[in-house]
Length: 221
Image (cartoon, rainbow, N blue to C red; front, side):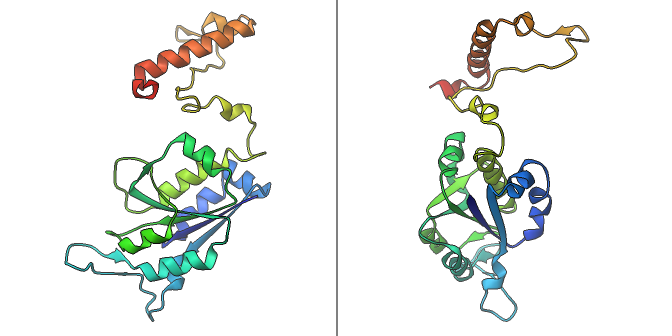
């Protein structure tokens, strides 16, 4: 079973995420436990403050290192991988999701406000970015990482459902269809109703390659 701790200032943001769909089923099946921790409780200040103005001046507030580092050190063990969610991190890819699914314990640190004390980086194992844009905090990236990893855990979904995911072989997924056969003159390709599974496999591989060449040629490099 995988254990995930999420350090955040806004734990209520995860209520729907943890109580719906595949994530909830994974928790119920005991494939994963997810513990959402408000790291404000690690503040040593009377008002539970966890941020302050930046040295050298500038706008916004910066997260202090002490509460976050204390939370990490309280929760981690010998099998822990600590991940900082930041736009400056490694671009998140499906390959990383497959690597993370082998870990026993993840700690995800959600940044907020203007940023975080640079010294926090000394206490994490990797930094992840879900894209070249800036959000108000790391909560949505944390959900994205959790979702992409948890669906890969044994018993959460059928293995066949993710073996041909987009990006698994550096290719986008092939197009899929369901009923009706004819929708407003747009018909399902005949090969998919031929019953010839060899031709169906060939068609899907060709379409996967074609779609990747058209939409994400960078993946083929």
